[in-house]
Length: 304
Image: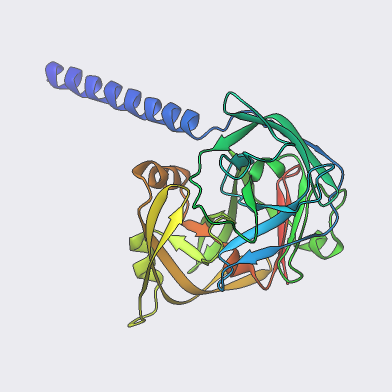
């Protein structure tokens, strides 16, 4: 009996160490580096440019001081950092590259963004000159400790707001900005859930696990299978009809399509499960709405 107790206590001690070690590993793995952006001025209305018939990519125009060219950055709240792509920036004189870091300042609307240590993502040039020069990504670091309005109905974004928009004031509710991830609570099928808002998954409404996808899809609905690129990963998506709603405070949003993905790494799936999220919300579910995100007081509003 004493031996059994010793073995049980030993097993319990090992289990606790594994759980604590796992928590520390995931906590460190998904904790982004210190925000390296310097952000000045409210931007005013920045026009959104969409790529693809299904509004697959949300782009914002930027300008470098003294350079008349218009360049574009994808607005991706799923990225914790604002980054540049290695090939498209090679011939831009306003960007200084040193030790795989970029030093520059640029304007998005009237907002000036600068840093001496922008990350550079290695990209492969196709050899064809694109009509729109996409040179990087604006990440969730531009949201940190600031107020932002994404006005899908008017196709505009406003960064570094000085005040809360009138239409958002009575619709505010709490959200989490954990490790530069926007985690929004909502009610789905009568249960409170957590959703990651990722503007990089632009063409999708709700991306979720296969098991959740099976429970949400409409019976006998057709499944559309597509392959897509996410950074350097090739993903296979399975999209079908859905007839559910997510309740965000006073606002109810319909889910018409639900998608699950094959091709994400085990680490990415672990991150979502570790955070207890139901899935990721893309821009498509919000195209008839506006989103105000206050990362100062951790309040969000979703309005018509």
